[in-house]
Amino acid sequence: MQRIDHPLPWSHLGTERSLSVFRFGSGSRKVYIQASLHADELPGMRTAWELKKRLVELESQGQLRGIIELVPVANPIGLDQHLQGSHLGRFELGSGKNFNRAFHELGGPVGELIGTRLGADAQSNIALIRQAMGQVLDQLPAPVSSLEALHRLLLRHACDADITLDLHCDFEAVIHLYALPQHWPQWQSLAARLKAGVALLCEDSGGSSFDESCSSPWLRLAKAFPQAAIPPANLATTLELGSMGDTRVVQAQANCEAILGFFAEQGFIDGDWPSAPSDCCEGMPFEGTQYLFAPHHGVVSFLREAGEWVETGDALFEVVDPLSDRVSTVCAGTSGVLFALDRGRYTQPGIWQAKVAGRDAIRAGKLIND
Ligand SMILES: [Zn+2]
Image 1: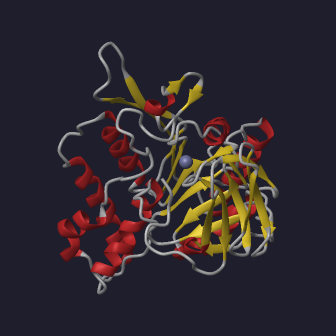
Image 2: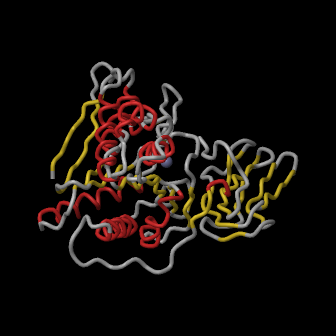
Image 3: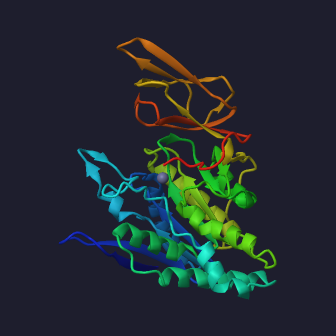
């Protein structure tokens, strides 16, 4: 195992932060895994530590067949954001920016740099594009903030990977993942191993999140240079490992073994591993996800659990205003998987309370919430 510590610039006077990358194995193929980019989403960090221990073992046994890079603490900035006992790890406090939005778009600049050299050979295109992605990032002007520097470092490590996992969680949720529709057939084994409840699939959710900044440039390049053979060569996903509180040892160990089994199936680890269960959740268009909101302020009582299948018209939650005695029941507007619930129980209009993944597209434009 090799440990690489990148100092982050722009720390406050008298302080210093760094980003630590743990690299295992060697070879031409690469897996990249990061955890807790939203710094208060900790199931991923706990799972990453299980992965770290297992990868140390597997490396010492000579079982690794490629490079696996692991970043168990992807956001040291957000880890430090506590306000009166609450950890606020989703947005940078100073700027209000979501830590997992607005990653650098590589497709355009890479196309300008090497587009004319792309040809009929997919393998040489992959090598050329990966090298150019690194070059584009290395040649950007110096970052103007710690957050910008962090984003660049994370993307620099992931942009030349074959597989990229970005480990997150939702407030109260069943395990689910976000990915490109083109990659869903390859993800089904991982989804089945993790007993995921649903996969949300789209080419562009509108937020330039980390996983899309790794996977989408390949689609953009393929569209821009239709004469060239450009496969979607970075299999990247945002993997939501359930609820905020899902850091129990057995859960982390189960997540870890599921992920390692998937890597083994992809040829990164030797040895005997269990095959994926035959049961797998559905991949749904992310355009089919309904966000449900309260019609007025009040206290929320959920009537269903995350992970359940719900039908159109099923009551999902009740909102009670104890001053006016107004009670509203909010029902599903689509049939599908109720995959996430909000954590807070006092609500107001404009804050999503529940998310239902349906089979039919009901939305367009920006699909991701902030
Ligand atoms: Zn997140």
